[in-house]
Each structure stands twice: as C-alpha cells, then as structure tokens.
Length: 109
Image 1: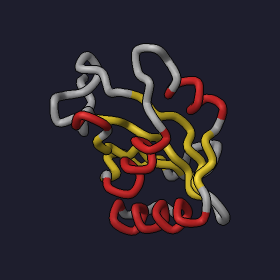
Image 2: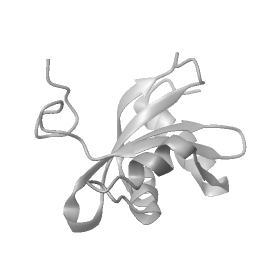
Image 3: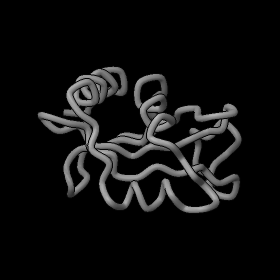
Image 4: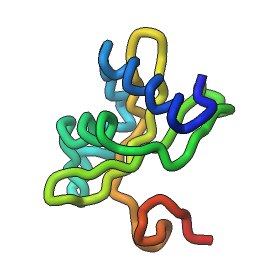
C-alpha cells in the first residue's frame, strides 16, 4: 500500500479525506505540556507535509512518518497509517535536535 513516497502520500490523503482517527497514544503525546500540538496542526501536516520515512512492514500495518509545519512554523512529525475508511494518527510530536538534523528529515546517527 505504501511503496513510493509520492504514491504513499496520495494514499494518506485519500484516507484522511474520509476520516482522521486520533489514536489514544497520539492524543496523549499531542497533549504533553511541552508540545501542545493541535488537531489543526496535525491535519495541516498530513495534507501539506511530506513523507520522510516509510514503514511498509510495520506490524500494525503500513505506516509512514510525515514532516509538516505547525503554528509559528514549528516542525511537527506525524506517524500515521492509512486504512480503507480512515487515516489512523499513531503519534505526533515535535522532533528533537538531539535525534534529528536541522532539516528534520534526517536522523542523527
């Protein structure tokens, strides 16, 4: 389902247009006091961001990591899994400079 990034992004958009389901872990991470990521920011990341990692063999089903921009141009990472009738938001977080290079697309070794 999620092979090439371009094709994968269209699959994500198609699922998101039907319905976006925020899983409990995502809600918990979004509401952490040091993050406070809104559903609007996540939706913006999903529809306007780009896939930076693809996880076609994830045990929970194919998923991907999207880099988007939130309020005040802050970078937001969203891990999501497109399903037939909806897009599952697995988690959303603010990428850390310790784990990511400043392009927010490349993991530090």
